[in-house]
Image (cartoon, rainbow, N blue to C red; front, side, top):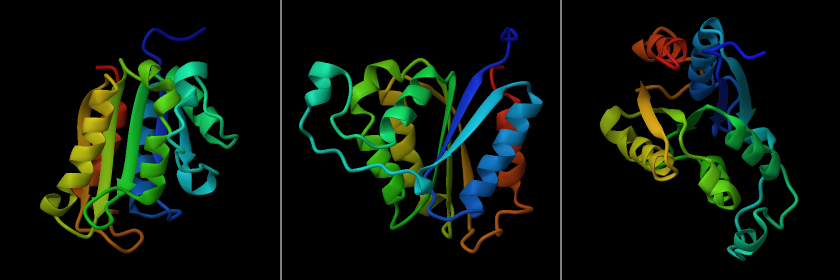
Length: 182
């Protein structure tokens, strides 16, 4: 039986890099969430087969996409989650291509993806000013789905793998995960 405060947390990592800065921040968030008694799953978009949306809108009639790839599983998990975290490095001022393709494919279940606690992780070589558009876009998407974004975690001024280690973003990610449901 589920504990009163136990929540299902889905972390969607849009980085193409394994063990990159976004990934490390996700892991800190997960560590905090698991210590807080929550059930966590992390999805690496880089290892999933997700085709771009065809804009055929068949999903409006059927509630599911005509394409047979990994997105149906991701949608089911997102719909069942109590908490969503979207993480993306910043490329040319915005989210990774992997994240954008996944977001476009939320269409079949968009009405069932609201009412959740949500978080955003953005990383990149710039300061907050250069990461802001990415963060704003991800926050707006989550809010338009009907979620409450509790925090943006800024992995700023990091580029090479591991540069985020020892930054305040690592502690912020851990504490955000630890405070889920408060």
